Image 1 (cartoon, rainbow, N blue to C red):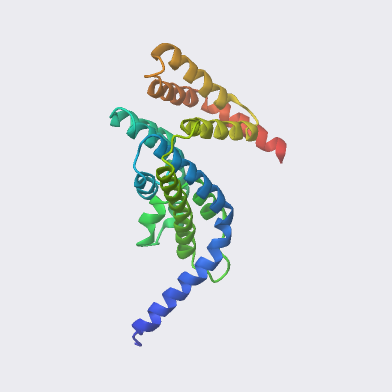
Image 2 (tube, one colour; image 1 turned 120 degrees about the horizontal axis):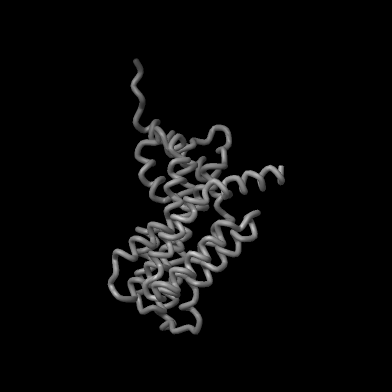
Length: 251
């Protein structure tokens, strides 16, 4: 039985990694600009709240969840309320649970790569790794790892630039505090345009309005999310049928 030369094995692994990087990078180019500029906004927003320049960088490394980082930044600058922060971030990112279920088979057998692939999965990374087949001869594990790592690095760079810029300029830029609200408005409008039926969106708006009227502006967030969860669960059948009908009509 012939023993494998360690040097040859190492060279082969490095070659697989380089080949996968060359294949993965073009798929992440459209995400590069979006992540860097949105990350800059997140960094400036954190600076406008009085957080140190390195805080956006730290959040981008250990949290890596764009909209959640805006929420965490606003919570860090306010009164200490870890329960509310935990609940809001959990609900914002609950969709990642379904992403994870969809990727179970693809992550199987990837060894030491798998923990980072799970941690680094965001909307854009999921869409590439789920829908894209690596070219022939490219290692799937390395391909998905590079997609995940590159997107993560783009976000870190953007948040760091924004944090440094905010510190240098001593940010008190008019309107920056509205960045998080604007982000969620844009996300809502984008989903509204893509959605053939607006039942889920209207449910969210009505639940939020009801919670705001009942609990007030300072305490409505968690009740609103609970109401949305209950309403969407009860209306799940109608929502799924509406999506099915819309999909059939486009076919």
